[in-house]
Length: 148
Image 1 (cartoon, rainbow, N blue to C red):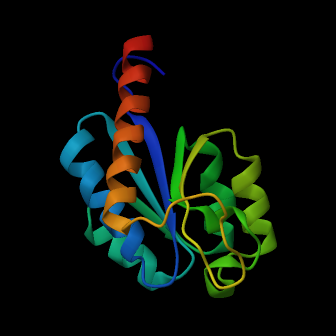
Image 2 (image 1 turned 60 degrees about the vertical axis):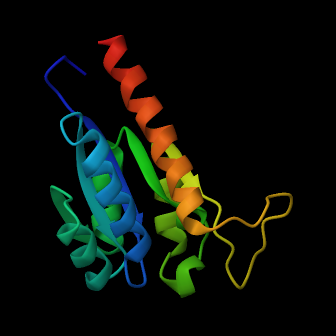
């Protein structure tokens, strides 16, 4: 990346897009001049909600994820985006594979779902987890800016 290019952050969410929307709003507040946000939704509602929160680009569905995931420097979302059939079945096996194989660094929220449980992690309010996620992204973006 050259000095003028923004870090490419991709936020992936499904269902109602509430988590992705919250993440994008916070990223816009903290890092707007340093990042370009792409919202990739598993459905149109999720994409729309993330776009309304300030993502510069957005696309929906399996093919959109396949086409756009390779450009991301950072890939953000709930852990389920890398698990086939997660998010109430909205994450297809192909989506999970493409996200997992993408070269961008993944920063994921450990959100339990009905078909899996994460052991060894304290149960914390989502707002606390999002705060920590935003902090980690800030550190990553600032470290990347210093490398240039």
